[in-house]
Image 1 (cartoon, helix red, strand yellow):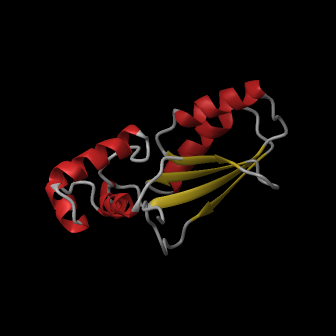
Image 2: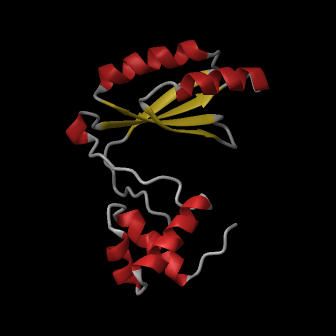
Image 3: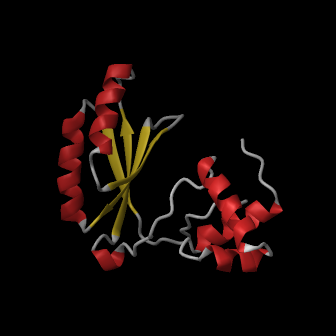
Length: 152
């Protein structure tokens, strides 16, 4: 793990809130010259700590107001099955997150869709990717907390 100090933490916290801040603005807020701040940001990017700088969209305003969590069980756990399943899931733009789990559920997907009919369309694609034992879904009724910021 790359060693980060208090200046780095302050820079990272600011960039997590607003990555469009200029190097000058970040430097002023953390108490560094823009050159020193630029070097730190560059080092954090090269180390892979800053993985990407993106624009976060309002899902509802782009027509994707329904969040669905899909719980998947499979009786097949070999490498070939996982490679096929992973490739299929990664090709689905509706899937925002894809995790392999411990416990009773093997995989969980987080999807963003327009409505229930849109989810049904995605579900039909999902079940054709690879053999599955069980697929169940839960629809988010209310998003109580959402953040992309990591606690530093």
